[in-house]
Image 1 (cartoon, helix red, strand yellow):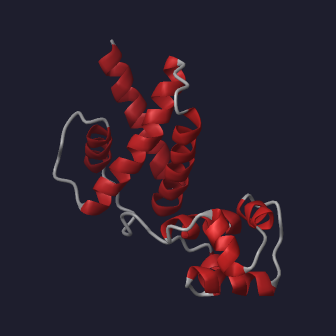
Image 2 (image 1 turned 180 degrees about the vertical axis):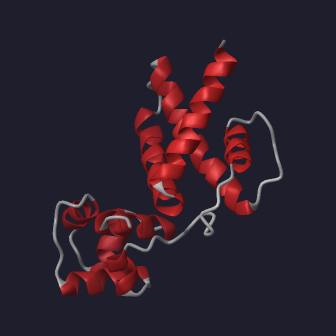
Length: 165
C-alpha cells in the first residue's frame, strides 16, 4: 500500500492536473496541497472530500492507497519478461511486449536517463529530468511494487555494466 500523499500525487498526475489546478478545483491552498502530497500534513474529512471530488474519484481510493494504475495485476513477473522489459527500456531489443509492459519499459527509461546523466555528471535539464525520474519511480513503485522495480533496476545495472566492458 502506498502512502496517502503519494497517492494524491499519483492521482493528480494521472488526471493530468497541475498542483495549482487541483488546489483551485478543491479549494485547498497550493502550499497545503504540496505539504499533503509530501506527507507533511494531516487532513480532515472535509479536505479528503474536497480532494476526491476535485479528482473525480471516490474518497476510499485515496484512503485505501489504491493507485490509479496497476501493472501486471497477476503479480507474475517471470525472469524472461523482466529481461525483455529492461532490454526494451535501453533500446537494445524490441520484443513483443504487451502495452502494459511497454508502459513499464517507458517509465524505466525515464529513470535510466536520470541515472546515466548523474553518473556522467551531466546537469543540463537536471530539474526536468529529476521530476520525470521521481514521477516514473512513484508510478512504477505503486503500480508494480518496490521489489519488482528493484529487480528491473538491478538487471538494468548488470546489462549496462556488461556493455561497458
